[in-house]
Length: 276
Image (cartoon, rainbow, N blue to C red; front, side, top):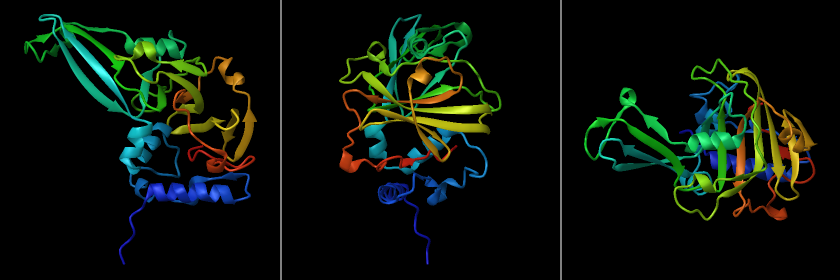
């Protein structure tokens, strides 16, 4: 008898259904197995949260991912010789923002993302108009915005062994209007999730999650099996150096979760992040 193909969406539906029925104070997703993920992940060892999330996206319905998380980045390149402009559109589900010791807050990181970068003869590119390898300038901007924006603060170097412990400040409200290439229906976002990494490298450490209950605007802290209420001001008012991923939801399309469909159940029944 052939083995039935693993369905991540079915497993998630089963998990959320169980969360509504159980009387346990917390639920761990370890109850179901991501069979097809075992080929690239060793679940005994610490794994990178962002890589794991991208892997999950690959197993979910593409239309669902596009509707909620996908956004487009416009890359505008201007040739110094012919002064003509070339455009390239790239689709993403997660926005990686490099950290810098001198930037210090999320607004500065977005300003750096949007800043015009000049190319010299040493790192010139081939212009598609004049076909010459020339210096020029390039600028990134949002062509479209997602319903849910996931920001990855790039704390780890390429080898994953060295961590950048730069502190970063951010607000509950994020407005991306100035970073859009064309006017958007949505540009304002509200913070509703934070993943922090405590440790020295991507393979060593501990993940702690903070998330907002969309029904009553209450924040919770998920630290392994311990789920406790949390005052978000304790994070926002302090300079911290372990934030790794930030989750913002569109103010216009705030998550439509009714009490009848509240997947987290009642009381302290919550979903624990698998990587902790």
